[in-house]
Length: 184
Image (cartoon, rainbow, N blue to C red):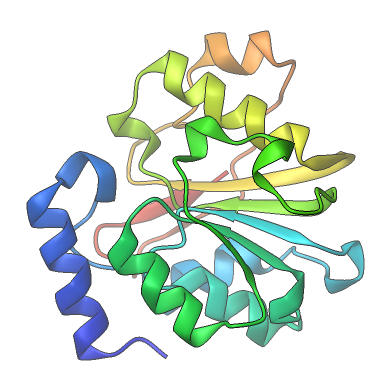
């Protein structure tokens, strides 16, 4: 599903605002597969933070998640427009993930899973705290959030994990992604 035009859009967005985009290239299909491998379609709605051109979104659909069960939170207009065209049944929330609240949704419903493509390593701990607080307000109590990183350890600072009473477990590292990335 990723085209040359997706790569061009991604590269342009990264060049104009590297801290917002976090990488010059979209994630690989191998990383996308690892991010969604434990997402159960039976768990219901899926919240995706920072879907970009939709590499993880496509992997979710291939996994059996209906596009109408996807809530895609994307700040970048260039990415949100691509997502809206590809997934017209999905709910597209054009917003900063640090400003998530149930009020941004026409009918706020709890989600069974969340995945994040946000570049947390380029964000401050207070912003990461706001993102996770908002995301977990939209998740059912027993839900999981999957996050990837290019860093050597969990991208969520330990003080944020502690404050939110969260545990981060490393799922795997995808060495075929450029650069290699780990999923938590």
